[in-house]
Length: 235
Image (cartoon, rainbow, N blue to C red):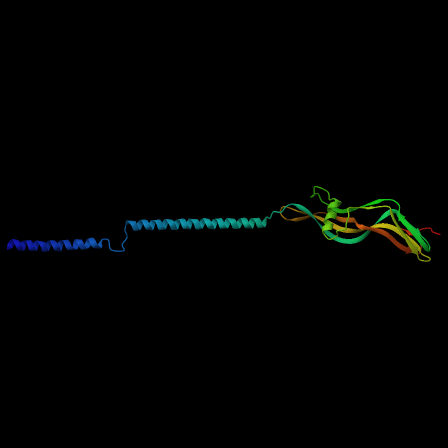
């Protein structure tokens, strides 16, 4: 009996001693506590966040660089160098043919004709021409530009052939005057250079005397025969 009681008491003591140890082992890693695997996950997330931050910073730098480049391109545009022309004032001009002026009268009638061929050429009166242009301005360049600016019937040269006979009655007591001419214009012009920076610089300007595609006789009457405002000794 004494041996059995001792065995029972020893069992109770061992049970009491082992129970707290088992409970302590259960509470060392409760549900939701961090383990070694959780620490690895946190490190990976942190590294990903750092990489995202680096990429965002790099994108911001690239955006600022592109913005600076756009501003730079706008401040310094690039154009193809070229020359263009502007048209100024315009007035009619007659190109009178030499040796085709006739005067007759007083009264009666007069018949005239062109007896020789003649060529009328356009020419420029240059007001100023700067060293900025390597080649001189040619009449053909100006005339082509003026044609594009609304005067399509201009010619660089006009040829007059023989013939063109004309008869006109003269008023009583008056003198008749005839002179063959080619119609044309006196036109102001200016030449401009476009630089690579898109800046416009005037390089030349002047007057263009240009024949048109029309010709004919000019007739007028006067009380006295005259030439260039001077009265002729006519009887």
